[in-house]
Image (cartoon, rainbow, N blue to C red; front, side, top):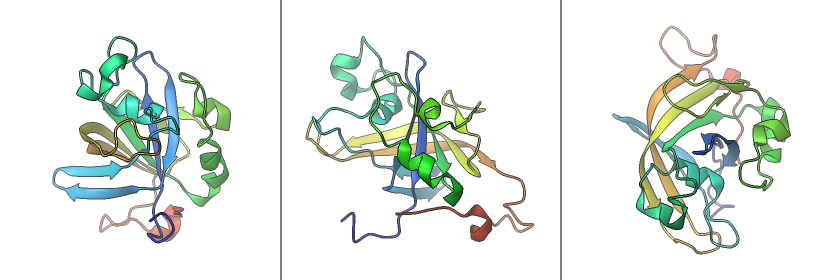
Amino acid sequence: LIGAIVPRPIAFVSTTSAIGGDNLAPFSFFAGVSSEPMSLAFCPANKPDGSMKDTLRNCLPPGHADLGGLQGEHPGQGEFVVNIVPERLAHRMAACAEALPYGESEFDLCGLTREKSVAVSPPRVAESPVSFECRTLHVLRLARNVPGGGNVVIGHIVGVHIRDGLVNERMHIDPTLLDAIGR
């Protein structure tokens, strides 16, 4: 599946935990799913021990049933930002895939700049040419507690940031200027 479905764009997802820690991670199962309401989806897998990755945990809305034992500790915020990855950020994006202890930030590890979002709590990646601020609409747990098990996060896009010069007079983005990488 991973080798046959190519190319795939990479979602560089930033989230913030309930205790204020910023997280940044790449996901290559990512797509736009609707223009009305404007929505997208990405698919974080479970950790090798079957537990939730920080990104998934942070995307769960407060009170979500899947928080289970996490409810009292660090519930999710139900928000995230998908940042498009241009070629020039490929190495730093790959470094963000490293497993860090909960609460440590990949922004700091990789030297990427946090930029305040307008409608959601998680920061955007300042170096990214396009960022989509999202609120979680649905989380589908396909293999709860299974090592490597799949999950689908669907987010309603509540804000879009596009670097000047990427959009033409017809509101089209020039893909060569975007220079987005894929897997």
